[in-house]
Length: 265
Image (cartoon, rainbow, N blue to C red; front, side):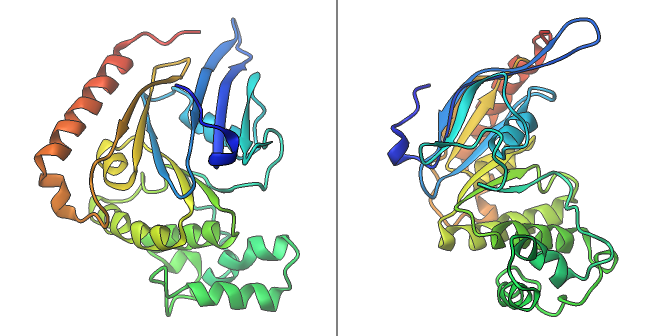
């Protein structure tokens, strides 16, 4: 899959490979991963368990260094350079000794913004994330959906144009997850952030993304790309659309074929 020119893209992966030391033999997690995102695009990655999806995000976030290949942001390499994109891992990682507002403002403070200014900026965004009235709540007082909203608010508040989300809704119940799917469209689209989402949920990928990329079993690489034809804003009625059902069946078939392959070392 060819990557467009750097000046036209936000995030570009070029022939990314990752091998981890093993107890007997090295483990090849990724090989030849190449794709690019456009400004304001929402891309989802799905693939069999253990195919390297989270590792790929960690590399893009500058937290892991690939064995070979490069990841660039606007033409500049982000390999080994954390802080160039916003990254939300699978867990919300809210600090239990900080209230919701302070948790949201923390990255701004760590970046050098005075605490008063950071709190004010965070408070301004609470209404956009459906959190008005919960600013002074402790994390233990928030529902799972609320905690995820605070974590997402914190991720967006950092201000980077590219956002990486690693299965942010995977641990939520079906109703809360559906509500957050509707909500994330509202907070993403007006801001035109570019989002790269890793998920195991095909429904979620098709509902949220402009493109869905399918990864192979380990060593993971991109083997399929599906463009979502659905207009925005998307509503729950989309799940009953025949085109949605056909695309879902196609993706599930591709994943079943990849998952049936024996992992390679």
